[in-house]
Length: 263
Image 1 (cartoon, helix red, strand yellow):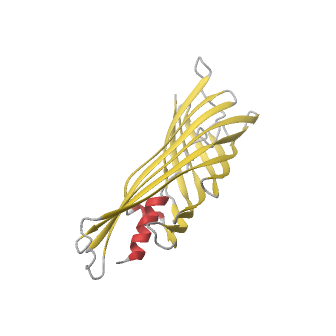
Image 2: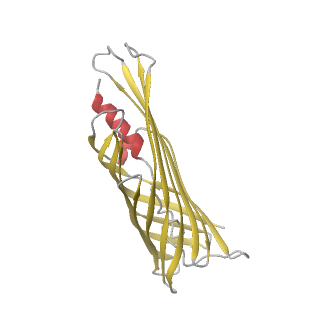
Image 3: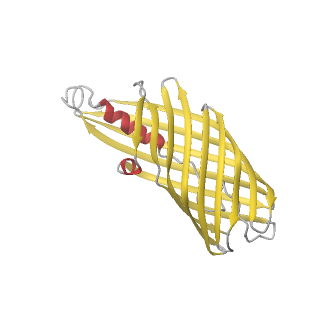
C-alpha cells in the first residue's frame, strides 16, 4: 500500500488545530482590549470566530508506523478538510479576564493501493479537538498600552480511523487516538496607534502531557465601531508530544484573520 500517503493523511488529521489559537482581535484570549463598553456589573464580553491558514512541518507517527517528516502547506491540508470551526470567547472585569478558545476539525482522505490485494483503497478520517481555558491579569495599563499576564490549560484530543475497502481487508478498520493536557503561561499586549488602529501580540509557553507547547503571534487590528473589530496577522504554534508510538512534534504557522463582536 502507499504507506507514505496514509502517513501524510494521518498528519493532516492531527495537526490542523488550532488551535491554537487566537488572533481574533485585541479582545481575544491572547490580547487585551483598551477600549471597551462595560455592563452594569462591570463585565464586558466578546465572541470571535477566526480563520487560520496554517501549514505544518515536523515529525509525526500513528498506527504503529515509524515517524515521518512532514512539510505540508495550508493548501495541502485544505484539500482534505471536511469541517472546521474555531472561535474564542472572553469575559473581562477591570484587570481580570477569563477566556476560552475552542477548535475542531475533521479531515478525511482516500488513497488507492498499488496491487489491490490487501485492499483496493484506504480511507483515513481524523477528528481533532483543542480547547484552551485560562485567566489573565493586567499588570500595566495606560491610555495607549495594556499588558496582561495569562495562564491556562489546553486540552488536545486526536482520533484517527483507517478503513480498508476491497481486497483481503475489505470492511476492516483500525483506530488510533491520544488525549493530553498542557499548562501554559505568558503575556499578551496591545498598543494603540490611533483610536481605531492598534498593534497586538502574545506569547505562551508550557508543558504537561507534551514535552513542550508554545504559541506566539503578532497582528494589526482595526476598530470599525465600538462593537465590531477585525484583526489580521501571523501566528505560529508548536507542540512536542509522544506516547506509546503516537508522535506529534510539529510547528503550525500561517496568516490568521478574525472578526470580534463585543456585547
